[in-house]
Image (tube, rainbow, N blue to C red; front, side, top):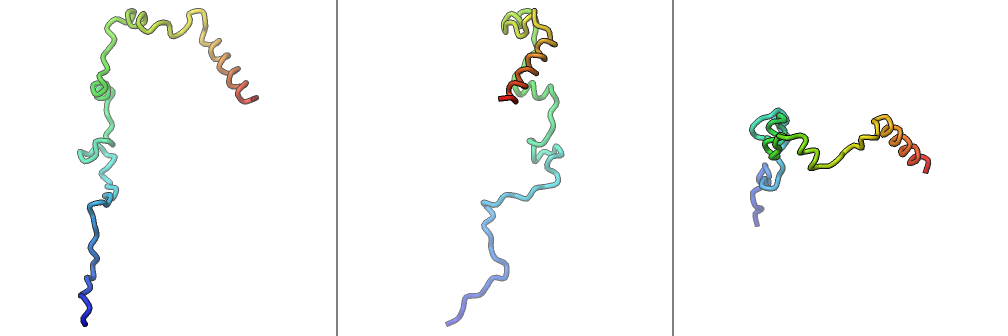
Length: 89
């Protein structure tokens, strides 16, 4: 009986392997668009963001986002008080 020949270089199944990290990744190369930094104009175009044509109409549409009778200082004081109460409980 003879033994089958031994292959000195084992064969690997490469179909399920993850390719190694390339130094070109993260530098805006075509092979990895995920890593490419985009301008605000490019992001706006991708997301379908349009400029506000009539700001007053926009404010009427979204409603009041900040009460006129409340100053920024009052808001900050309220927020600090809320945070202190959260730490004390």
